[in-house]
Length: 120
Image (cartoon, rainbow, N blue to C red; front, side):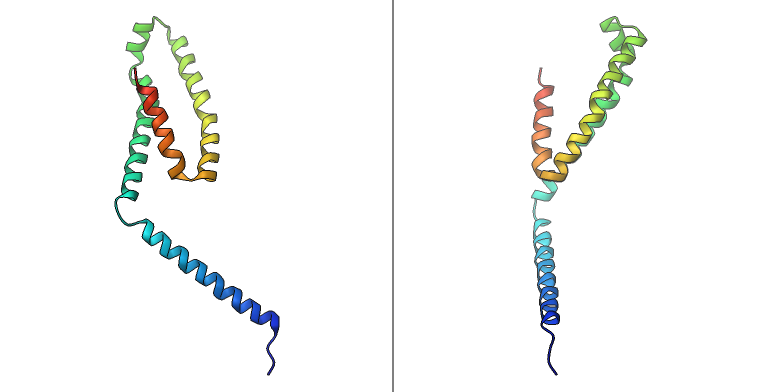
């Protein structure tokens, strides 16, 4: 019985694909060990909670902010609306950066920029 050369290449490509998948699985298992994944999780979690408080704080502090700045409710609403008009489109850019560079390469510099922005 003669074998078909196309069939032979198909079997070789399947075994090659299975080997690549096995190698990737092994790399993923090794990447999950140690303290580095937990450190990344901690940085991302802290960054998320900071962002949550940054979005919620102006609403909670509304009376005090209006008193200190001497603004009306309309002016305060306009300022908060402008914040969200800038915040929403930036999510498109951040999503593209995350897709292209990955979480590790984007979150740490972004957290550093936010931390520097909090300095007086």
